[in-house]
Image 1: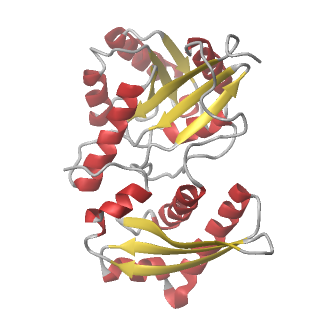
Image 2: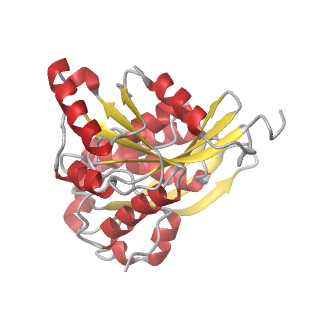
Length: 300
């Protein structure tokens, strides 16, 4: 396959928190590269998924949900989202059809009026809304944004995802592939392992634990027997949060660790020994090194 035959380009996947962006990226790539949670504002880093369609490489920048920032981490997440959108060849705007146009979605619509790149509009979760409401929503947003293409999908069910992938492939510029054929993300194994552990914390504790936890990888050792030993610390802001994560008799932390270990082992393709401990650090959100580890820029 010569470079004359190939295409490659960047697609910024933007949308309000919990619109289903990570689920869509995972579906387009064909495997898990971004964490998925019922809790909003889960994605923090611009973890990129790499989808292949024929001779085309589609580099998906899975941006954090765009929302009203209140603290440094929030500002870093929103900055990452907009940087991803500005640097891309195409913007894929995902709208939660069931929720409709909330304040966050309206803010994004207002910012896309003077865009520089082609826009694809994706109405996700169509399985959760009646056709009349969906048609009204689609008509309204399409008239306001005049996108190049519009798709109705259910990322969870997989409905319509192939149509999105095919259209993205045709829209990418001609040129050589930018990553090896077998690579599915630009995230390091350390980053993905930390995200997989955080995914379990969010999913198991999203009704109890405020949006205030981070994972820091302390050590990563590849053992002679082919397995990997990983030691991570869970950073929380208060003692009360530490108690929630640990649970009665350590049961919750054990459950989080077991589920995370299984996901990390699946990702790495080898046995994993995962050791977790919880540390209280009220100012973890001000730690520059942690921002680098999760792939975000320091936001002043």
